[in-house]
Amino acid sequence: MKLLYDIGLKAYNGLLTVAAPFNQKAKLMLQGRENQFEKLQQAFVGNTAPVVWFHCASLGEFEQGRPVIEAFKAEFTEYKVLLTFFSPSGYEVRKNYSGADFIFYLPLDSAANARKFISIVQPKLAVFVKYEFWHYYLQELEQRHIPILSISAIFREEQVFFKPYGEFNRNMLRRFTHIYTQNQTSLELLQTIGITQATIAGDTRFDRVLQTAATIKPIPLVDAFTRGSEVFMVGSSWPADIEVLLPLIRKHKPTIKFIIAPHEIHENGIATLMQTIGEGAVRFSQADATNIANNSVLVIDNIGMLSALYSYGTYAYIGGAFGKGLHNTLEAAVFGLPLFFGPKYGKFQEAVDLVKLGCAFPVNNSDELLAAFEKVHTTPRARQTITDTEKQYVQEQAGATTQIMADIQRLLKR
Image 1 (cartoon, rainbow, N blue to C red):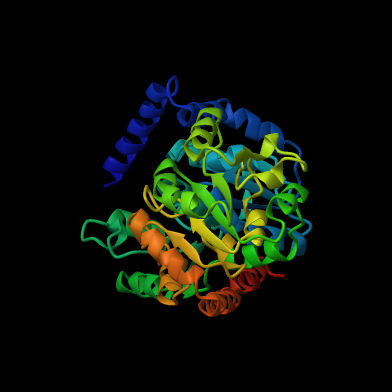
Image 2 (cartoon, one colour; image 1 turned 60 degrees about the horizontal axis):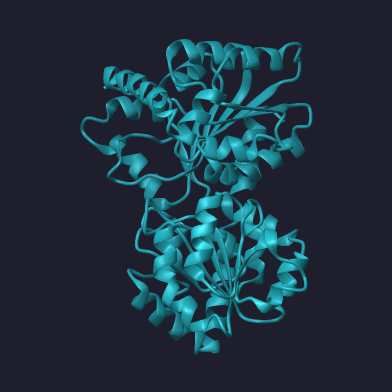
C-alpha cells in the first residue's frame, strides 16, 4: 500500500503537469508550488517565535478550522500561525487572510518534502482539519515528537481505514496525538480499529457561523433590492441546480425576490445564467439604487458576500447536491431558513440532521422542489417551527472550539 501511495502521488503530480496548460486549477497548483521551499525559507528567516501549523485541504475545511485558528491567535499571542492549503480553491481565496502570519500551499507529500518542510517551519503543534491525512508529514511530525491534532474529523464505514487492506491508512490515524470527531458514529468507527485517542467535539463550523451571524453588516444594494419582500436565497449554485430551480423561479419571481450566488464566478458562467433567467434579472456589479428594486432576480458576481446574503433570506436552496456533493448549509441554517437541496447530501452530518428534524428538504427534480416549497410557503406556522428548531439545533451543536482549545492549552503547557 505504501508503494501504491507513492506511485499515486507521482502520477498525480504528472497529471497536474499535463493538465496545467488546459486546466486553471492544475495551473494554479503548479504555479503556487514553484520554488516553494525557497519562499518558505525566506519567510521564516530570522523567526524566533514559536509556530503552530494549521493545514486545510480547501476553502470548506478552512471555514471549519477558522474558529480554532482565531481562538488560538487570541490566546497564544506569542505564537505565529502558519496556514497551508492543498487546493487553490482555498489558497487563492484566503492567501491574504489576516489571521495567519504565513500562508502557503502544502508541498506534495514525500519523505524529502516533509523533512525539509518541518525543518524550516519547526512547529510546536500541527492541526489538520477534517479530511487531510498525509503519510510522510504525519510520520515526520511523530518522529520529532510534535503533537498532531485532527479536528472536525468525520469517518464513514466505506473509507479505506475500515477495510481489511487499510492497515497503511490506519497507521496514519495512529500517529495523531488526538482526533476530535464530529459525531458518535465516527468515534465508534475509530474504536473498531483500535484508535482510542479520540473524542467527540462536534463541528467547529457551528461556532464559525454563529460568530459570523453576530457580526454581519447590512448591504445597502441588497436592502434596496429586497424592500421587505420574501427572499429565496440560492447559495453556491451550479448549472444543474439552476435547471431544477427554473420552474420555481418563473412561477414566483413576480412576488418573491431571488438572490442567486453561483459557486463559480466567471464571466461566461454569469452571462449564461443571466440569459437563462431572462427578464427581471440584474447583476450585482451592474445594479444601483435606482434600478435594482425593479428586478426580481439578483445575480451575485463576486466572492465573499454569501454568509451575509443569507441574513436576507426567507428560504434557501443550497447548491452542489446534484453534483459532487452539497455545499455549506450552516451559513443559511444559522438564520433559521427552510432549506432545499439535491439528493447527494448523505456525507454531511448537519444536512442529515436537518432533514431528520424537518428543517431541510432534499429533492430529486423540479417537481419535487415545487411541491416541497409550496408546502412550506403556504404554511407560515410550519415555517416558524422550522426556524425555531433550526436555530436551536445550531446553538446546541456549538462549543467544539472551546473543547479543542482547552486541550491545546494543556498540550502547550499553558
